[in-house]
Amino acid sequence: QAMYARELADLPSQDVEARAIAHSNRALCFLKIEHFSDALQDARVATELRPSWGRAWARFGAAAGHVSGASSEQTREAWFRAVTHDPNEAHMEGLFEAHRSGSGSSSPDRAHERKEKGNEATRAQEWSAAVAHYTVALAMVPPPPSDPRKKDDSALLRSILHGNRCSALSRVKAWGLAE
Image 1: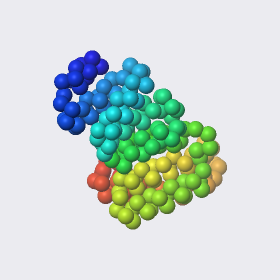
Image 2: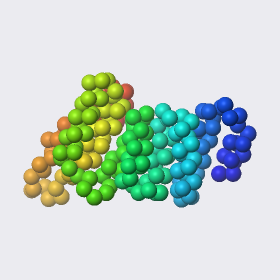
Image 3: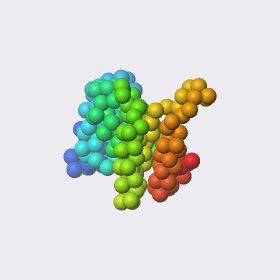
């Protein structure tokens, strides 16, 4: 962290991108040593400097998850923004987990609502937002029953959501994730 503090002191205030990178990297260092409040503070600055940078939002989400809880609105919003700006596997997993954790998170009705938001984003050709909405919807679908002999009432919805998300991922050329 000391290296990043020196770097930030030496960087001109108008070099917004370099300052955002330094704050984001220092946030990662703080996350690694479990100084979560410091990580959250640096990640917040990084997102303010570069609001469309997915990595900064992911670090904000990771830090917020430790400070205010994995399912807090702040955590969920940060991971959602991470996916909308950079729909990669780690960001989608963070968003999924932020919505999967917490009580009452499984709800087919809420999953359908999120699916519709994903469909709206698809119609508007906002592919990354569609990926984010479908990911949230997938987190809200009840998990399959552990006993394979029991009927999975959400299998069709889960399949549709995976298909829709794969389609949106292919539009952002995330071929490896669109499987």
